[in-house]
Length: 448
Image 1: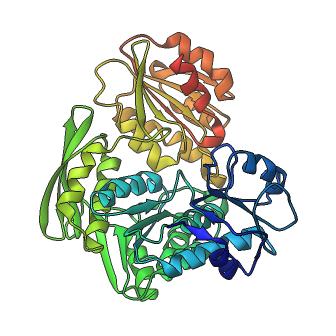
Image 2: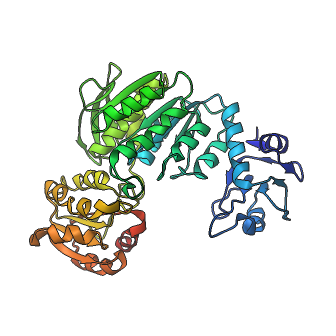
Image 3: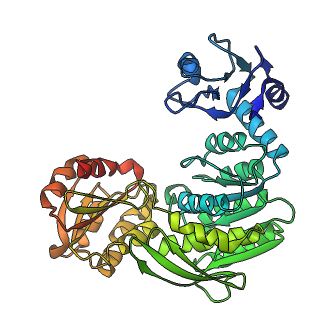
């Protein structure tokens, strides 16, 4: 059975189909479009998707969602393509029989979502949002692609301003909402962490009647999140973490080969599991995922058994070895909490521990203080050398002891050669920074 046919899409969007069609997926990018997809011609600040409709049909698109006349294949013409996409998402949610989960938080959203993919895949047909599709177009794109026969759906929801999560959660209408953590991310837009907690807690407002919220018990803002859940009249509120009383409680975790073993108490049931990647933050994400499975009424032990297949994601802790150098690629994003968690991954290394760090962006007026504050987790992880890139990382560089100073440069591109020249076989290297700091340049150089 197709995902959408012309008649269903017309009814959902109030659009007009130029010819009968049936599509099996959705895409907004001709480079990743699969034959049989509906190409959605979104109009952004820099590009207009209508300019790529011809390429979409050449790539095998089954139809195109457009707002003006185009040639080359079947079309669904709507008043506005963003609204048309949202209409499809709303209709997909209305017809769904799946148990729906929404994930947000200052860090760990995508990792938790991918762990949930493994957990629910072990239990039934599962649909999960791709990559980090968590914004005003990513969420409806993922939701509109929800198969009608899915048993579970997991959607990542992000924001950098008030009201964004409220709107997206109202579209997703989850049965379960989980907040991974609250940390000083996007401070430029919010000013303080209480405001970030309030913005993230908008996800509770979109819960279905009788729905459940899962919050991080170990977080300093747990009490505020509990209060916001109460204001939203959430039927069931549970906690995850190491704190006593947590319904999904992490009891222990220890390294085991390339991964770790964890022990947890999930709503009164003792669970032991092998996880395919190490780290305290991964352990917390895994326990959160098991808590979600329990709240969804799923088989927690079967879900836990699937955790052995988890591997850290590209840019979010993925590991590789090149020329005898062990690399931890955490180059996709960064805030103080995720920096500390990533730096802790260096401590078990047997060779030199080297951190290559780029600016944490959107940190607001206190950004320099937060960058300088990384000196503490660097010391805790016994890091041997630090290489730093970016104007804000200069604040960290200035407070580092001389023995830990590798090099500082204004950009990742300028730092790259200094890093490569300093490394030797046996070193373990963490590369981390906000995506905009372009630390991926150094990752790509290390692969050569």
